[in-house]
Length: 318
Figure 1: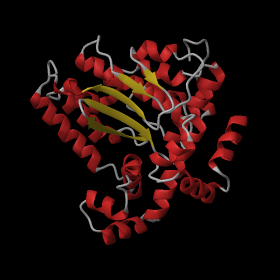
Figure 2: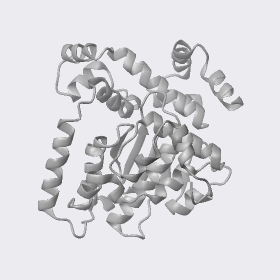
Figure 3: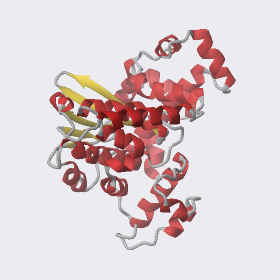
């Protein structure tokens, strides 16, 4: 904000935060406050890629203990697996995942929190920061094969291309970095196995004391499994190594049912794609696990009272 000639303190307060929070890099803020703050920053600066500018400033050290663990992993693949496994200790807003498709790897980042504001800005920043982390591991000259972003194509896409140094594909369901599979096998210079073990133990202790809601863990799983259509209650219970009855009992204890959480997650993903991208309805339906666009339309009308097309048109009108 200061680089753009604006004092950030008033905006930080308007977002409901104390500016002094930013004096200590170990402080965390809620996803709702982050979304409000980024939205205010975009509006005040009139910079549609403000999230990208924030992410460009991040380094692998910005990821705290997880970043240090990545630096001391044996290979780049191990580092990315550590990121996927442990990012939740400091980022409960989104769920990362790593997938292998042929000779390529896909590192994705999906915002899943209900009614998250500025999800496009958050995704832009997260992917920009992830590319910086990969350059720290692979060398400053590293570049991805492609980058996918869940946002409409901006009028000027050059800031994105300049940072990523790769083709950028807009209007995708999730944010993702595409890289050659061979890059995962690259050894990380200076990795210390003893320090890695110590960091893993510290992170395990942090996760053990996190006290996160069971329903929140289910939402994280659903966010990356809906499109695969392997997201029934039985499927998710199997992933957690519990039976269906135990899953239902634990969810009941947190005040939510499996079906309601699934619908809530689908609605949130649909809202993000309708509001922030130009992805066709049929493609959104497939991303949510529907075999036909008409089934998605009926479900969306139940959730919101209007059709997906009407929702998108109303959002475009502001």
